[in-house]
Image 1 (cartoon, rainbow, N blue to C red):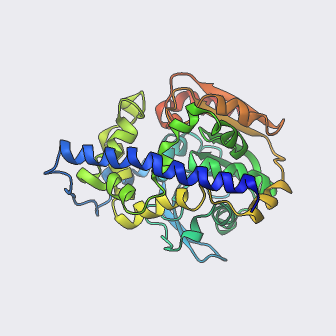
Image 2 (image 1 turned 180 degrees about the vertical axis):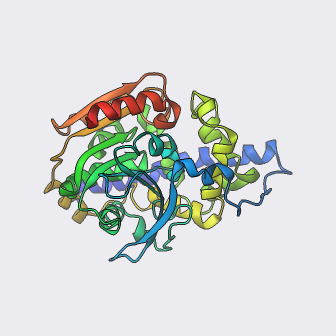
Length: 346
């Protein structure tokens, strides 16, 4: 291990310690504010009404040939039309694409999956199943299991982080790629060197702890999900597009401790823990299809500069900004997002 690797290791460990103090403090404040409700847990076993809206599509699942994982999804449109595969982020599920499932079903077979660990998809227990390399290979298996050789890949947040690499490693499977509010890894590494993004990313370090992040997400009957999606700081700006009934779908998807642990494992398996073999694999590949990056300008977790930096990774990347939209851009302003998508796809 060289000097740079040693310095990176200790910086990462220091950051986990530093920002864990903030996370633990937040957990303590929630307890002090509402001690009687802290351990409250409702019945989230029944599927919320909004998730069963037939206008959004048909629920289905596939079993991946190599990994043997069951992946669930909702699909809209005619099977046999060009595939549009939608990949959600944290802490979401297929429902994040409800506005796109209807919008693009006239031309595409739109399939919004639940990533491994989420909702009714399989939840492998080993941390190794949540490395970016393994998850990217899973996405290739999903395309194959759906009966396609390629498609248009649309992704957001963690889904976007995976699809940046998928577009390089599995370029033959990509007609076009659309990524929303998710930076390329090289851009994020560069911005980590700034205090601004380092502070915004505090939760990534807190999530390295066992138990406590799961507890914070689940306490007070999953109240943290309301803060994620409808909170004044990080929530959508257009609350009509994110009702409490909409948030209930995400609560249902991650209501169990096991599901929350799986979702958090995406951070634990990848932040500060990328294998040299995977890095070499990425260096030998490149993006060879048109890629559109859509960015909500009011993202409180990711600096705006990340969009422009990400666009520099390839001359095939273009950027569209959605002014005033939050991190949850395709739900916050679906009209603007869909307009940019159609323009790019046509």
